[in-house]
Image (tube, rainbow over all chains, first blue to last red; front, side, top):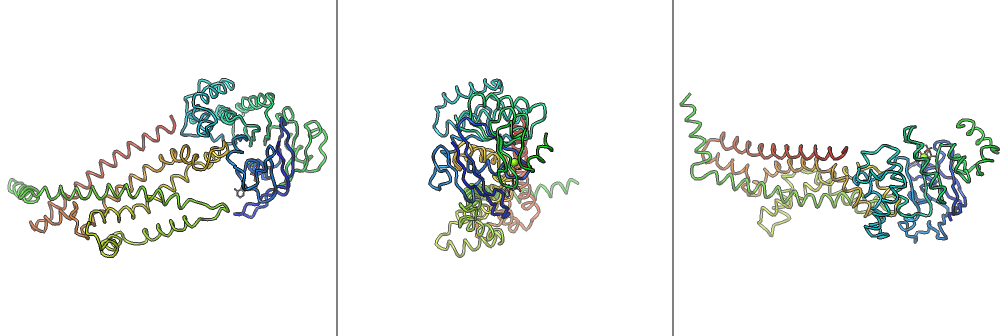
Length: 242
Length: 233
Ligand SMILES: Nc1ncnc2c1ncn2[C@@H]1O[C@H](COP(=O)(O)OP(=O)(O)OP(=O)(O)O)[C@@H](O)[C@H]1O
Ligand SMILES: [Mg+2]
């Protein structure tokens, strides 16, 4: 579903060579978990996948289309590729339901009434129906993140990218968000998740990638990733986080 | 004491009543308000346009010619006195027209635009970058993201300083006498040179300006409080 070939990213402002040749293959239904030390380029990698960052070099295919081709309609690609951010990024000027309905309606994917019915169904699924008319500032972090997940789901994406979705949550709210993500995983959604939640990685991940210094150093299913790490750097990393 | 009171009343009468002089102030006030109001609207349009020109970035992340033009405009306007701008417009640029009200409106509109541009730009840039990223990540275009997400939030940042800008503009129009317009300030000056009693006309005009601005300030304060309240509802 997603093919990445020799991806490089250098930030022109700082001349910082952040991604140094990443290649990978993600097939439909996989739950990829990306882990690695801070600054290793995990966020940058994820943001290159939906072109929030422009890769400096390399190619990315999504569903058979080369999205790094300048001719590709990036906006259309993004309608099928959701993203969930560490800082939630709910639209502060809109109510919960308007947050969820905005993109499907404005992009003419659904009529207003369809979008509303769909939003209600999704809100029910995360048990937040009573918040439909609240503004983001009235919600807890966990509620915000569940709404943010629902907002991407409303577009019916084929894959969702998560960038540390639980890292800015109070500890007691991490569980409710991970629960939603587990449900999503069980429903068959293709997911790429950057996280420090090793429990989630082990339980939900189908493949775990270890990134360090802009490269994927090692990737394996959870059992061998955790049980039998090959590289010294991963062994060191695991000894710190586990 | 009685004598003093009578002399004040008499000088008040000479400044405002005799020969229907209050009409001069009123006409002057009309000019002041007309020039300020239309200049503010023009300034808002020009300033918004300039702000978006200045914020435009090319595909390679570099500044566009638009942004360079906007920068030059803002630099020149902010680097020269507005009186001089008015004189240049009246005596050099618009020599074919003697419609001083229109020329004043255009001058102050162009002038205010440079300041409004900075206000709008700051207001838009103050909206968290994550808002734009979330909009774009859902597939909304740059323009849709601006329109539905960023601008509604930026307006809240922009309104209060915009009110201040209007207050400054209202006071700055006191120089339109330079091109022959009789605004409130010049009206007061005219009366005082006729009665040889500057006190009443000048203090009177000052009180009128002050009251208008006081009312505006109070309204602005209310608006600001309302906007802030809707932030954490
Ligand atoms: N817009 C940018 N401009 C310049 N440098 C950047 C930019 N974004 C990220 N970087 C740099 O790229 C490197 C990798 O950042 P990235 O955010 O991808 O790391 P990360 O693995 O997600 O780290 P963390 O776990 O802290 O989120 C860092 O050194 C960072 O300073
Ligand atoms: Mg990161």
